[in-house]
Amino acid sequence: MAQEDQSRHGMWSSRLLFILAAAGSAVGLGNIWKFPYIVGENGGGAFVVVYLVCIFLIGVPIMMAEVLMGRHGRQSPINTMRLLVKESNARPFWIMIGWMGVLAGFLILSYYAVIAGWAFYYIFQLASGLFEGADGAFATETFNTFLADPWLMLFWQTLFMALTVFIVSRGVSRGLEAAIKWFMPLLFILMVAVVGYSMIWGDFAAGLSFLFSFDVSALSVDGVLIAMGQAFFTLSLGMGAIMAYGAYVPMNTSVTQTVITIALLDTGVALAAGLAIFPIVFASPGLEPGQGPGLMFVTIPLALGNLPFGAIVGAIFFALVSFAAITSAISLTEPALAYLVEEYNAKRERVAISLGVICWVLGIGTVLSFNVWADFHIVGEKTFFDFVDYVSQNIMLPLGGLLIALCAGWVLPKALVKAQLKLPAGVEPVWSVLIKFVAPAGVLAVFVYTLFGNVVA
Ligand code: PFF
Image 1 (spheres, rainbow, N blue to C red):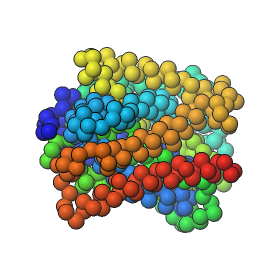
Image 2 (image 1 turned 90 degrees about the vertical axis):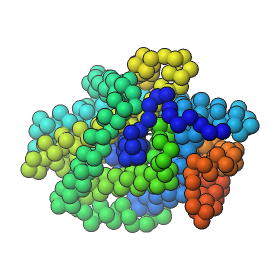
Image 3 (image 1 turned 60 degrees about the vertical axis):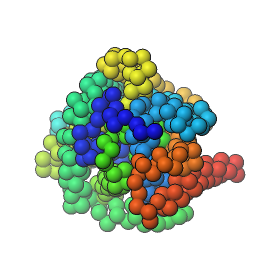
Image 4 (image 1 turned 30 degrees about the horizontal axis):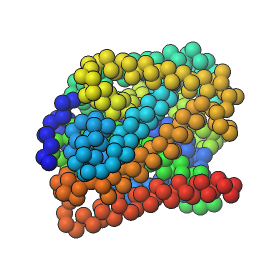
């Protein structure tokens, strides 16, 4: 049952590079743009606690499962699942994990590129000094004017997609590693610097208390589902991205240690983003934490625009957000890309371009959701963007994660899992309980709770 030691797509050149690559996938818009605004919309501290519990009790074991499955299969998630099904004498049903992941990847990347395009645009807005002397109203107005212009948004979305396609088409070491090696360390350093700014010039105490004070009454049923969806999204779980990256991990790398490191890095960046943004919100009249997707685009320019060297630091901040988004976007394409290369012996470049075009077209729906189609609702109050975001992040990723946990816990041969994880005897039962019971039950409970909550609501 021994698998090949190499993947045909290439391998990470070291343990550190895998950590950076997986952290590159995990740390992205989800941490810097989304985490603060959904914390803001869902009442703060209590939401953060649910989120942290989901990360460590559900996210970490599922991430370990994805890495071990990918590393055993050494192929795209679809073909890895085919192999695992064969070796486990399981039903072909489980291959759905791979297919659903490809679909979720398309949906997520389609809107991810649009929001990353906003960050691109803001690099130049800040560098131009536009926000010098700005107040909250000006920052909000500037953002709204941008949202109202579909052509401008389309331009930046196109640029982001083109850059992503260019990097992924170069392959694992020349493309993925080359980008990740530089962007990630820079991002960590800059995050610390921006938190420092916020500590000095924002209302840090109010920001801290919003992020960490526990007020259960502020948490809704929907909030719990959103927290879990966010845990999956931020760790890039449930859609095979980490499984695809796992296929390139050398055998001598410890799965458990690396996964815990990745989860800590990811959580650290999300909390740092909250600590950078909320103190500014509370120190600026006219801004509120629950203002939605524009939060980062209003607070950061406002905070930095008024400070010495703020324009340049702000431009660098948005450049790094864009890079963090690119290192995530490339992992969103990897499951589909690797599969098409394997299945049709196609050239990576060609497949990358085709995938990029499909996502780009789909993304136009998101671009229009903020202007021309703003009043067009797919279900309830949800615009096209809200709908794609909700279905992919809050339904498809947790469902994918549930299936992955069940497959790793109940379907795969024990020997296979053991050979991959090499856990010390004392830790093995903990892993078993988490992957067999806690993670699936957690995901299921939240689904049922939400359904029930919506029925009574
Ligand atoms: N984890 C990324 C973020 O937090 O921005 C988003 C993401 C990347 C989700 C890759 C899923 C994925 F497969």
